[in-house]
Image 1 (cartoon, rainbow, N blue to C red):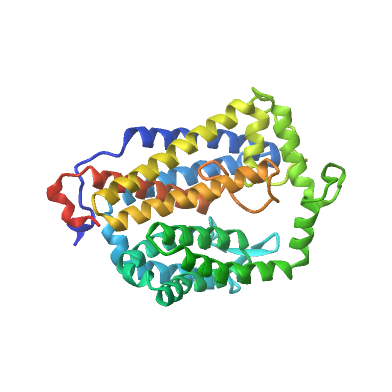
Image 2 (cartoon, rainbow, N blue to C red; image 1 turned 30 degrees about the vertical axis):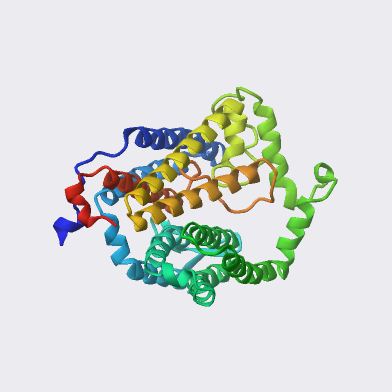
Length: 379
């Protein structure tokens, strides 16, 4: 069993993709450290971030040795364990920050199960799609099964509440269903049934409604409401950076003006300190990683390894959405929400499980390039 589990592909990770990931990690660590040191006045967050990155790389190195069939065969167990963690969050063991209970306090580390759920749901949905392809093309069975895999984790996330993670996970699953060949009409029904309850819950939350209305007011720049303060300060920082930036460590916004400069609003600090050139670098790196990932998923599909292909497609879809939402939030295109910038923002669970997803993507590529005699273990 162990020999199969750590089955060697005979291939090294793609050096270009690996170098690109490490480059983004290095750049992100420097900028998030600059933002956290300026905001908190200490090196604690920078040291923690370095620990998270090293831990993520270490776990990722182990994950790259695990064949994809392991996740396919154990996906139900992975989902059950993750759902158990989400339930624990709602008990007294859960940690509440800024009105949301999303963490389990492990003393030295705060675990955020919703970050685990993002990758686990992709692994689970990929197996579901491979086994249920015929049923998914049947209108009634397709909708009912799709809604089943969406509903339980969504309810637990909404209870925290974490509407952002709920929307990202639901949208990722729906896009994976579309990629698997589900009829558009079925997908629209499933999406409508899944999204409408979330929209209703948001509508009954006065604070969230007020934030949305304030954001879209015509006199945005003259609105002194706390609900648009974060967006205004992010835009001021980006404008101050101009083309080349104010210089590393020279951001003004990170000190007292901009809330969460090292997490949700890190892109605005990148703009202020490194300018359009720095922001362009981040955009270029992410575009390369995402396009490379989709090509890896496409190569797996050509090799008839449908599970690996769906997993790769799901990972790239999730990262694309999270990246796009964070950038749009920092540029003032949408209201601010708790979305980190993958591999750049400060955060333990987010960093570690994003690096795990990158390791899985590298593993899919390694299996695609393996000798044909070894592919009997690959899915």
